[in-house]
Image (cartoon, rainbow, N blue to C red; front, side, top):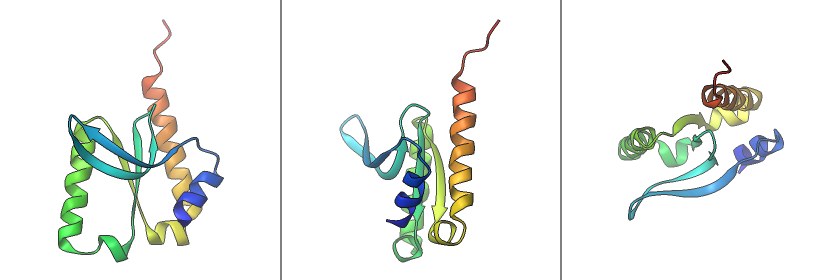
Length: 107
């Protein structure tokens, strides 16, 4: 996929196509995941995410991921194709912010 190529080209360490589970059931299969900061990037192309039912499932999955402590960043096909630098910058910003939140304060 183009998005994976663009984000991988930015040099972020990441996992690709990961199945997240809670107890015995799958919560979601996510395209890109950063385990330490608990960040997920979802790629929502119009061809596979345009129906009402699919949008409802996407929203439910994002909500469940959030309840499990994951931050979800959603990118559209247009974001990736027309604004790839913006997608990379957004992910970098999220990773920086999450890293800053997890760094213990120095007293």
